[in-house]
Image 1 (spheres, one colour):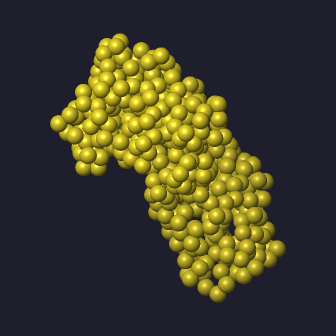
Image 2 (image 1 turned 180 degrees about the vertical axis):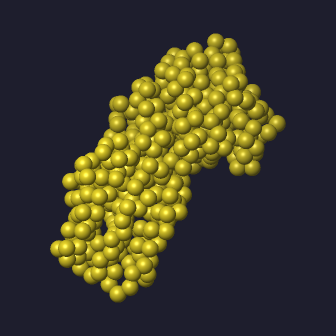
Amino acid sequence: MDWFKKNLTDDVTLIRILNRKLDKFENFWPIPRGTSYNFYVVKGSEGVAIIDGVDFRFSDEFFDSLKSVTDPEEIRYIVTQHTEPDHSGTIADLMKIAPNAILLGTKQALSIGESLADFPMERSREVRDGEEISLGNRTLKFILAPMVHWPDTMLTYLEEESILFTCDLFGSHGASDKVFYEEDPSGFELIDYYASIMMPFDRMVSKAVAKVKEISPKIIAPSHGALHRNADEVISLYEKWSSWKPSKKALIVVGSQYENTAKMAEAAADGLREAGLEPIVVDSSNVYYDDLLAYTLEASAILVATSTHNGKPFFGITIYMDLLKEYRPKNKVAAVLGSYSWGGGGTKAVMREFENLKIPVIEELLFKGKPKPEDLSMARELGKKLGAEALKLVGIDTPS
């Protein structure tokens, strides 16, 4: 079965649909462990509320699982926390079989959803920040969180149970049948999810996390992946990530056709280790890009090592620099090294991109042909120099 249900309390049921049949999320990000869609059934003395829908491609699983928990005629409210199709894809059809239900969402959610998800506007109602609705003995409170990561996003707080439903915030990939993060930490991809989905919206994520911290819920219940009983732990991670707090890690992104540039990159990695950083060497032609963004997120130093191909950086390096333009990392220092055979140009484009990103480049190192012992020595020294500058960002001064 591709779904399961779990009672979080007597009145709250998690239903998780396991997506093991699509190999990409948003048709781009690889999900080798799959992903999942969580929605929630909240039962009160005066009716039932459904928190979120799922991707329309999982409609059969959605309706089979929902009907195993409640009669659609008992549904009083359907809450759309935002209208991205992986959340809203089943809502219009749910409204058809839940004749007594009112659809609740932010003003923007209802506006977007009318065209994107066929929301029936005549049965929809806007909710505002801090507004509450009653299910009799249960109360839902709405907290607006715009641009996390869509403009229409909101969170929903079940006051009596201290459960906060957080839409995409604190989500993770992985088609795990474990409910809570600590039950299967290797099965849930938390940082990859943050890096590919939340990273460009750091300021708004930080504001939303501050609201969550003030609420201090007992359970954080996102719409993808693991739930969190240790709210302080995941809040702390999000505070670190959204503030771009650097760590003692260095990312080396390599674009090498015949291993010459790769040898120089390994020599630079040796220098970074000598300086006290943990280097992560990644082949840009053989990496999942959400992993690459996750490595970027935590690194204090970025070293781009590229061969020159038709006067430009190696293909994988071009893609990486394009990602950086979109995700705009902060609190980094960088270095660039590159090889050429008869004409350069690869590193120049990388240097321009770092300049546009306002990431300081401490040095550019070029070599011709195969690396000689003196080239490898210079690459190692470059790594040491980059490491020393990165440690200053971390807050560690090294002797000169």
